[in-house]
Image (cartoon, rainbow, N blue to C red; front, side):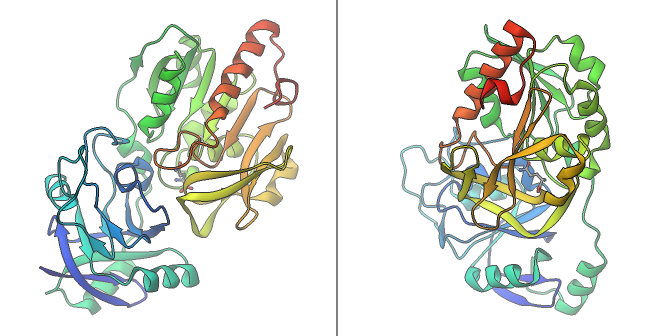
Length: 368
Ligand SMILES: NC(=O)CC[C@H](N)C(=O)O
């Protein structure tokens, strides 16, 4: 069935609808990963967004039981060049079309995704609608222009209640801002005794769990929309080692007095090179973010840059100069993507061990 993709700048694309045939509105962003569409569509950081994949053939290995990053995908829609009707993989259980129908997510295929990527790169991230062919584009554009993007995505996707994910190792409190399950898997794989807590858990509640370390997860939206988390981080900083990923990185930076800004079109994909400044080593990383920590704002903080993006020089990693706290803007848990940065989980555990032994760990004397 024909469907339309309409951008707020007035551009109209006609394509073939798949998945749910409902209308949807969201911020359209592009992801440059060549594989990993199942992890991408189930990454809660895309809450409120319509994702376009630059790789031209999507759905070839179907949807399986194992590769979800959350139970309910929060993505608002999917845009592809071509969607596979007959997936071929031994793990495949559904086609993308069947899965999107079940989850009530609209998709549109047959779109010139190269053209759309160029528009977004030129003008920046735009609002867009996927809608029925019968809708009047003028009306849709004026509705798009009036539509405000949501600001409560973290509340929507964070766990409502704390829950344990036990192990015999270090006790980690994992603050869920819209966590990809890959983070929990990485901690459990290393034996950690994890307690996952909601985004608004207070510093006192977290410290009562007697954590050996705190992890701040990834999550959707603007980090400034989560002031309760910034307040919490200010209070736990220096009391226990902290490792932040993506939104967690941005929140820690804000808690330390830095600023965050919205990027023109962000970084989304599983092929983004980042440089570790101390060694000059390059890692290929998995990324999904639309905001970044503002470099100029760091001089008013006790944070130092540890990693930068090779494509545009933006900040990809930070460490605190006085306390055991470090963060990365990219995804060491990968899922999807390369596992070059996986060692950061070991570095976090090494920092916790040093803090336990001597009680004086900082990022500098633990060598991360
Ligand atoms: N994946 C994330 O945690 C993204 C962080 C934030 N929502 C951003 O877009 O920059």
